[in-house]
Structure formats: C-alpha cells, structure tokens
Image: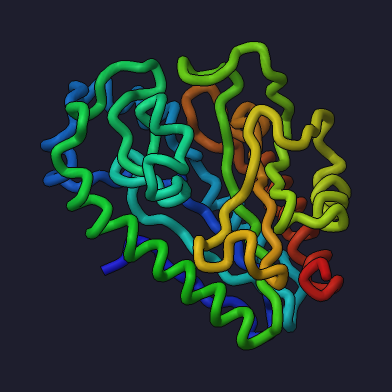
Length: 270
C-alpha cells in the first residue's frame, strides 16, 4: 500500500509536481493515537496543512502546453500528521526531530503534545506509510529518468503568514519562498521560478524554509535529477476561513504552469 497517488503526465515530460502536505485525512486508527481533542486537532490541521496546494498543482497541469508539457503529479493522500514523507528517516539526519516535527510528529505547531514521546507507533507508521511512499517516489523518478534522461521535481507547498511556535519569528516571510539545494537546483531553475512567479511582489530564496525533496537513492548523487521547492504564503490565495479564493488560486496555477512549460522547453533545466 502507498499513500502517494500518481497522476500520469505526458510520457515525454520530465516534470513531477510533488504535493506532500495538502491532505487533512487521518484514519480512525491513527487518530486514536493522537492526544489533542477534536477541536484542537482541527486547529492544528488548519495550521499544518498546505491547503489547496493540490488544486494549484492540478490547475497547473491542466494549463500546461498540450503535447509533451503535461507534468506528472505525485500527491500525498493523508495528512502530514500521519507521516511527513519529506523528512529524513534517520534521527541523526533530520533536524526537525528536535522540535518534535520529524517523520512522525510528536508536537503540534504550538509545541503542545501531539503523540506520546517517544511515539509508540513510530515503526508501524514508518513501515506502513513512510517507506512505501518513498519507494513510490523513487520509482516515479526512475521512470522519468529512463523515459526522458532527466527528472525535475517541483515541490509544491504553502505556509502561514504568522510563524509557528517552532519557527524563528525574525525571519522574513515573503509571498514566495523558493527552496533550493546546492546539488540539485541549478541557477537556471531558480531563475525560471522567479520569472514564472514574477506577478508576486515578495520573493526570497531559502527563507523562511530551505531545501527541496529528492528521493534518497538519488540525493546528491545523480545530477540528472533537478529539484526546487515552491512555498506560497497562504494569504496569497486563502480566505480568512481557510477556504481558497478561486481567482487567486487560478492565477497561481497559471504561474506554476508557466514554470512547468519553461522546465520542459529547457530540457529539464539542463
């Protein structure tokens, strides 16, 4: 079983839109192991969930140029409170473990207990959700490399206007944060992101978040895999009740589609 849903794109496209944090879905079994009340959990989901980033990615896929431009989509179908597939599985490698926000979260955004520490179901969650998800993403990247000779992972995220308790409140929070990696993000790809999202006033690189997702088997070892993270500040497209504004959502989808087209036309930013 894998919670990573793959939506095929054009066979000749190297581009993967990865949406890891858009879902609020938590099974009854997992919910039983979480400590907050139902009301507290809803508040946590409002802050933790990258609401509607799946809609932005889907809209971008629909807007891309016909032919070989339609990207592949990889979407996490459960909440990051179940498992966060973008964290490192090793305690030694994952800095967010210090905040209780590693692969298996034990603390909420406000530093309240989410699970007992250490979480008794950690191994079960890793075996059931994390590792199958990682395998699915690895297979997708392998498939794109075999088919096109390259893979471009565009990691689609969002973040709240106000910092969470585990974040540095002094760091800027621009309309768009671009997360990069020294090995996998070429200057050309960063420039393509900046051009595609030129309509947003404030843009920054690696602040308040840094890095981007690459399957561990290819991480910093295969230069054919390019990657970049898109972090949209949520007030750019969400109303105060956490519902998306259709017009603003559409505008961001078109910007993302422009990036996808640029990556495809440039031969996966190589």
